[in-house]
Amino acid sequence: MDELVENRLARAALLRDPTTPLLWCVLDETVLRRVGENKAVLGEALRHVAGLIRSHRIIVQVLPFRAGPHAAMEGSLKLMSFEEAPALAYVQGIGMGQLFDDPATVTHHALTYDLLTASALSPRKSLALIESVAEDYEHDQYA
Image (tube, rainbow, N blue to C red; front, side, top):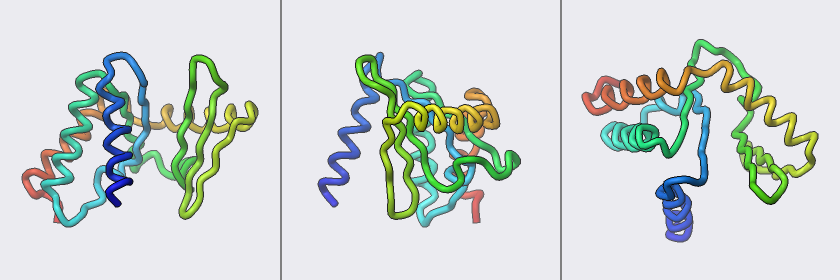
């Protein structure tokens, strides 16, 4: 467990670099609203994400419930592009993950991501929603 936490903290430290990497993600609204045992921690986590957004370290779009079913409901999708290497796509589901380097497959997954961003709230509206949900957690508005 200590190793997993250490690795996660090391990855998070990458966002301290003022220029790279660019992290652009689409979060399903469920991620914001799934209530755990400690609402204060959830609110704090969302405030941290909002701070990263406001400092221009990440771009976040929220895919609202009203968008309905979408192409990435089966798991998460990570697209990675590099200056001096081919693009990669990593698809993860329950108990499995697969890395793709085939250009046609990566292009297919990039299209899926593009469709998600097209259905998601704008970055500005997403930030407003994230901050609103964080405030609700801080004021214990979720039962």
